[in-house]
Amino acid sequence: MADTDESWDVEEEKAVRALRPQVHGYYAADPGIRIDGAAFDWSWDSSANLDRPWTKAVALGRGSLRGETDAPNNWQLVSDPLPSMEMHLVPPGRVVRATGIAIPSTFPELRFTVPAHGQGQHFG
Image (cartoon, rainbow, N blue to C red; front, side, top):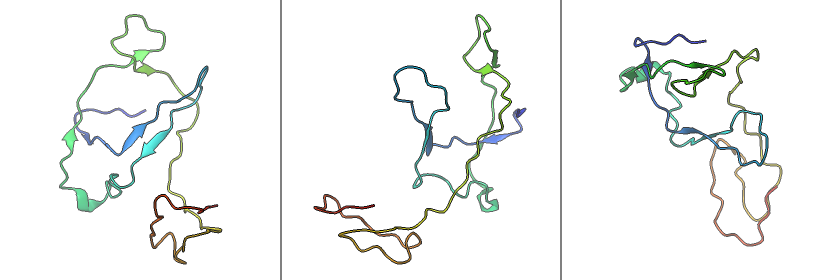
């Protein structure tokens, strides 16, 4: 558990958002996330970013105990015996085959453009 107070600097990461599960019935997993790689600040923890406009953290209220009645919010504090989810970058792999388009031999280091509305192009 993190014990945060006003000594922490914070920044809202607008390039990361939770996805609402599109299921009917019971759903027992964390929501997926969408990361906009073009907007994400990949060097957020770099010492070169010390002059960034971060703001001081503020208390938004206390968390609620699970099952608490008349709770001030729905941030329920429930202990979780599972370890935190891992999230790390992994190599993107390589193109195995492509038809109708030339893939650079240095992909993914060298980017390329897939033409829109191509006819008869199959990728796999």
